[in-house]
Image (cartoon, rainbow, N blue to C red; front, side, top):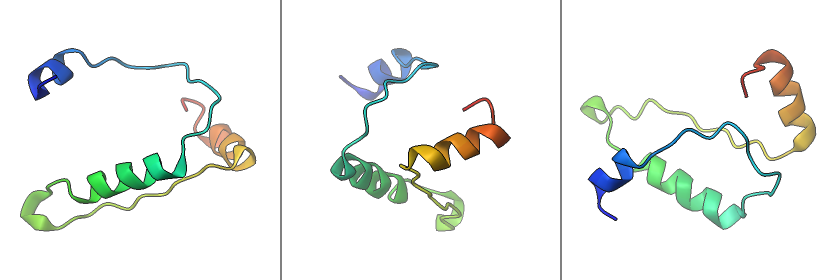
Length: 66
């Protein structure tokens, strides 16, 4: 699959499976995200990984769209 096919084939997911994501996958995603270009190489991002179900439920109380 090339980039154009990936962009055209993207879709929004509104319902997620309850399965947890392996930590190795999360590590790979975070590494890819930190290598993403930013304007002036400022790299203004902060990433927070939340994998505790109780914490996720608390977040949902303040951000019900999640």
